Length: 262
Image (tube, rainbow, N blue to C red; front, side, top):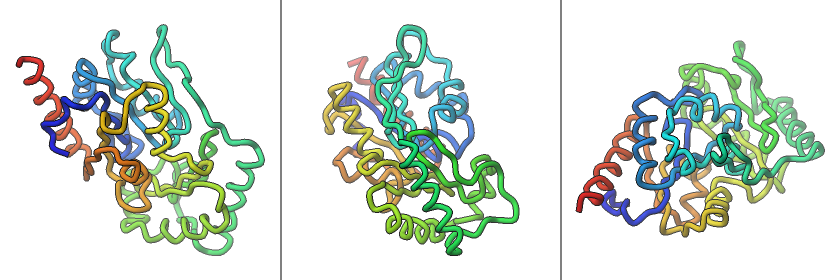
């Protein structure tokens, strides 16, 4: 997408880990300031594989939102299976697609099968839970949910381990969505719930068409958890780092600022 066309968009949608912040790390003040400034011009939504609790820890609680801008920010945790908006002084649920107890059991059983078959070999050192119940999504993290970035990068640098696990999970759970997330994770949601589902919900609840959105993400490759957004026709910008995202978003600000002066 030509950055100069940002004035034609109504909402910026972005991934979190690897895009707005390092994996499981807090959004830094510089990124928070950029987003706050963008909210003065247009809506902004974050779709992440992380839980609402994780997004609050990494993102919501780290951005000093202007009161007038806060209602323009939307949060879609767990790959778009939930949506929250700031309203009446707090974050309110717009929708939530929670997994049933039986669905959760099937997913946990599938992860155990993968480990029993030797497709996943538990590292000698893990950091926190390997498989986490996020209520609307079950997520496996190869070296644990709280692993430092170096450990995540070292565990599956070329995504080959997770690709093999995903292929087996697809066979075990044909009626669920299985996606690679972040640097070391695999996310499982109900069939049809992925980041494209989040885009559909943005359209449904906010009324913005596909042509009025732009998406930033670091996993727009085939099999990545951002890839469904690309397939649904949204203008997408692939970024390789948080610093690259800042550069893109600053470019948007420059264009919007110039447009406001014209």
